[in-house]
Image 1: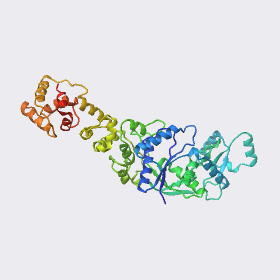
Image 2: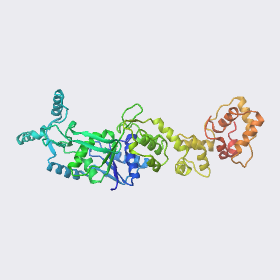
Image 3: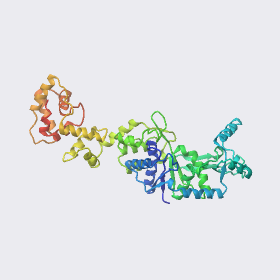
Image 4: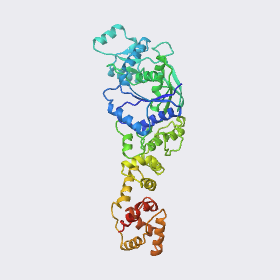
Amino acid sequence: MTVTVRFAPSPTGRIHIGNARTALFNWLFAMNNKGRFIQRFDDTDIARSKQEFSDAILYDLHWLGIFPDATEYQSRRFEVYDAAVERLKAAGVLYACYETPEELDLRRKVRRTRGLPPVYGREALALSPEQIAEYQADGRRPHWRFLLPNFSGDPQQPERTEIHWNDLVRGEETVDLASLSDPVLVREDGTYLYTLPSVVDDIEMGVSHVIRGDDHVTNTGVQIALFQALAAEPPVFGHHNLLTTASGEGLSKRTGALSIESLREDGIEPMAVASLAVLVGTSENVAAVPTMAELAERFDPAATSKSAAKFDPDELFVLNRSLLHHMPFSEAQDRLIVLGVSGDQAEPFWLAVRGNLDRLADAASWWRTLREGPQERPEFSDDDRDFLGQAFDLLPEEPWNGTVWKDWTGKIREATGRKGKALFMPLRLALTGLPSGPELADLLPLMGREGTMARRP
């Protein structure tokens, strides 16, 4: 069997880090099993779904390193769903209901007062042809419910089957369908709710594994029953824990909280996002993983906790720095060119500054400092100004090599008696304008003698 997974968001906003977690779980599972990854847009809600969001989601996925084998749109597949509806009607498991929302709400309240679960009582199954004709004459259009399995043999009795499955993440799971209403699959206006298109597409597209958030666990019981009603073998299901904000709030595409777009614009590396999105809330240590292939090796869906995981954006910056500090020049080169960093000095410059970067874009300011000098001239005391005058008088002649900084500071120490911070801090401020940064031993050869002397106060 070919492993086939799918990531199926509704294109009603930009995806956030929680959505990315689901996409990455599916992508890594497919990688580890040499399987296929389908990007499916659940866009049957025509009013809220937008192509611009579909395009943006694909862009975000590509940025993360996810490249689908196929892209599908549910809005282009209504004929397939229409055919499935006719099959379910013919089998007697999809039935018409004429209640208004107000009537349904009243019935739920009545059931609660009687100590009964507030589920739909299947009153529509007892309607006579005359009652149906009366509803239709009043202009009522039916919505259609799926008749959940009932082993009692009598659809009017509350006894129903329990649905069991071995969850890829959570282990043995059970959903008691007796606690659920028969789900509406088709609205009064003929449009489809989530459940039917999702199941039909999973069947038609050969999806073997459905990996998604654990807010879908109850849905899975209904969907397995629907797979069986359509004479199809259900896929293997896996439900991972959800991510929340650091304060415990849920994430939403509509609010833009921790969207992939915002993280990208904030200069976060894609593998920092992927590493934290996948490893947080699992038994694995959260660390910066430089490649998707290495992340796949560490990925085990069964290692995921059952409780929600808090996503702290501050951890992203820790991982981001770690990735940049170890990033080879070959990986950074093209992006550095965009920042204006090029030429023979580009590689030694990158190796000199990468250990001090929070974001790759920060390299541009260090490149300007290297080429043009400090962006702002620091103020020095009279003592430090006199010291720097002596120091620059001792600047070695060229050619320079990797020992020039050591040679120069050795002469300064001998001539002035200064050492430690009293020696190094004025030199750093004069050369870079900043109290901290890359090793001056690495920067000095890149500045050259002329460029260094130009920084003399």
